[in-house]
Structures are given as structure tokens and as C-alpha cells.
Length: 141
Image (cartoon, rainbow, N blue to C red; front, side, top):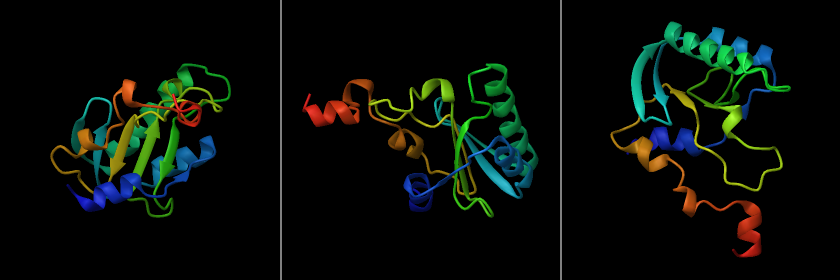
């Protein structure tokens, strides 16, 4: 496994807290990226233009759903000023803010570091029957 990819993936990331911040992030990307459709395990090398296009497309998709108060994907980034990893989550698959369920897998991950073979599968969340939310774990169920 690429220790650097796993470190970024599991490390501390900052949340993008506004639609303007999301747009600014998309427009600020430079260099080469690896795009990972995390739910499908697809990995593709792309340039900054394609990475920005991908983020704009996710933004448009979420906005078109007209969900209350949600206009862009939930987004977490490693160092917003010079990102090495961006994780996006589909708001429609994240459940409620007070949900006691386990967190979902990311929707798309953009990384300056390419994952090694098999790394995406090893980083995916456990099977649904193995996932336990906070409340379930607290009750010992």
C-alpha cells in the first residue's frame, strides 16, 4: 500500500464550509491529480482542468437535486491553500446530521498521490452488517 495515500485518506482534513469556498477550491487546482470514484473503485489520472470540471459537475448534480440548504457535495480537503487530497461525499447518502449510523464511503476522492493496487478496496468501509453506529455500539448491540 502507498503509505502516503493512506495517511492522507485517514488523516485530518478541513471541511469546506460554503458554496463559495467549494467553487474557489475547484478553480484553484493545479498540476496532475488522481481521480477515484470511490463507490465504483475507478481510478484515473487527470490534469487540473479535468479535476476542476469534475468538481463543477458534482456541484451541479447536488444543486440540481434542490435539497434543502445543500448546494454542493460535503467536501474535506488537506490544506486548502495547497491541497494534496480532496474527499467529497454525496449529501443524499450521508444520512441526518444526528444520525447514529456509520459514516459512508466518499463519493469521489481527488489526490496528488496515486493509490496502489487494491488500496481503495482496503480503505472502503466495512460491509453493512459489520457497520455499527455510535448508538448501537453504546448499547452493546
